[in-house]
Image 1 (cartoon, rainbow, N blue to C red):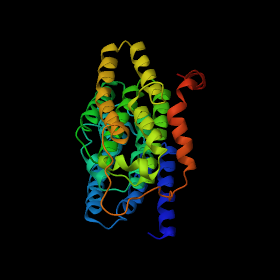
Image 2 (cartoon, rainbow, N blue to C red):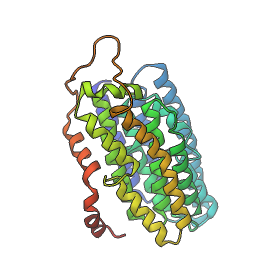
Image 3 (tube, rainbow, N blue to C red):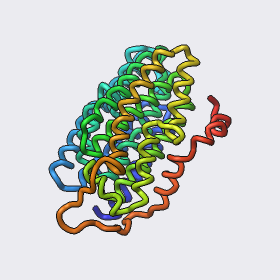
Length: 348
């Protein structure tokens, strides 16, 4: 893809999200999400291979369905209330339709089935954009809906945590595993959104840091399958140490950064007298922890070196700048001791 075209698409991604953030009108917010969708589709199809074209087509149809539902719900809400304000959705039917349409856009269970298949057909950089930046605008609108009955958020969140963990079992493609990881982490965000929006924001920020670190690590080693992880020691040896720590942080193990949001979410659910819900969420997260441990062992302990036939990529010179990876990896691993300072800065 020509650099001017690529730059224009990246600028359009930023413009679409910014338009949604700055909107108080349903139609303008919908336009921002559509600009986002139309900007990422050429990025998804830039590799002219059947798998990428198939993933792009699936993504387009799913997003078109969700956008049509969102526009219909927004128009219905304006017809019933007489105004287009995105913060005013007093009717249960329209707020539920809007929530389900946005859940389909970001891949929350049970509307998640497109996410792993689409991720499998993308390169790692486009998959990173889909897993992080493309979630921001819909999550912003979900935050502003805030239905009077939080049960729909609880149901979507808990189901996403379970499905995100269960779906990662027996997967050998890293991009599918990362897709299920995204579904599980979105479940944690939605679960707490009704009770503590600042805590949901903190969860999103930490999730983006951890996901960027993991995707960038796989981009440096050019790895897309579990079997390829065992040759990381030959390509970039330091990643043999840092990547398992990133994976364990995504799993929420202390004393890594990923433990912080889960710990605080479980604490907040307990304060809201939702101890059974907190227990179910904590137990369901063990599913995700299993495949993170599986990936960690694949890099370090259990799998012998799987040297491919042909030229071994020995000590490759990185094609990307590694400073962002160093900064995000440090944040992914070492921020847990700063939890009291973070809690004092955010209005929990």
